[in-house]
Each structure stands twice: as structure tokens, then as C-alpha cells.
Length: 159
Image (tube, rainbow, N blue to C red; front, side):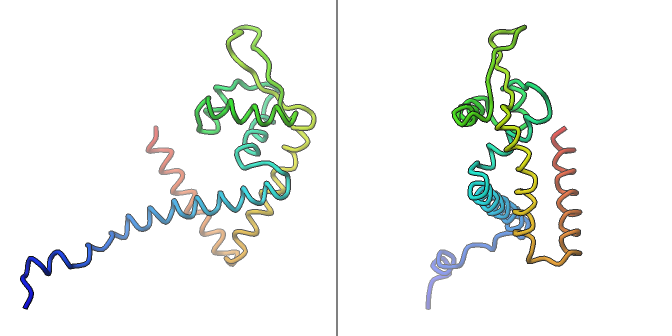
């Protein structure tokens, strides 16, 4: 007969709480969706999700500072510098110095960048349809409502 202490060391670890499984599932879904969308954008427009997001945000105004774009994308200015260098090398954005504060870099779309940015929403819609085609229409609507509630709660908590 085995010692009780030995049985304790051989016992299976405690089950993972459902809340932790759900939380990790959200991260898995996020990573999978981002990977799929990234692949779709690369194969269709030859740009990444990050590049597409930056281009679309730059359509909102004539010029945006690197700092403001970083805040809108939720990343650091060092990441924006690399991202803008990639886009500038492809002649999709132009960088210039702010007239008031010469230390500040301003970003603007080139004509080619604006044309590419205009194509992003349709490509994103195609990617969304491909990802959600496994769900009936009503379940897609329910998923949207549930995700909106989660996002709203996150945004309220952040304030």
C-alpha cells in the first residue's frame, strides 16, 4: 500500500478554473484572428495588419504626429518609427518636421498610400467573412453583442 504523502505527490494538479480557461481562450482567439487577418492582408495587399491599421488611421487627417499615431495604435514610438520607415520605404507615407516644434515628426499619406488605405476596409471585410462563415447569422450578431459588452467593460475599467 502506498503512503498517503506519496499519493499526494502523484495526484493530478488541481483543475484549471473555468475563468482562467475562458481568459486564455480569449487570447488564443485574438492571436488566431490576428494571424488570419495578417495573412489575408499580406496575400491581398502585401501589407501587414499593423501597416494597414496605420494607413487607415492616417486617412483621418492631413498630418498626424508619430506620438499621436502610436497612441491611436496602442504601441510605443519606437515601434511606430520602424513601421513608418517600412511604409516610407514603400512610398506609402511621407514624414516631415512640424513647423512649430522641429523635434516632432509629422506623418502623411502619399497618393499611393491613400489609394492602398482605401482598399483596406474591403479586404478586412473579406477576412471577417472568411473567419465567421462557420457561424449562422444570428450567432454572428450575438457574438458581436457579447464582444461589444466585453470591450465596453474594458474601456470603462481603464478610465
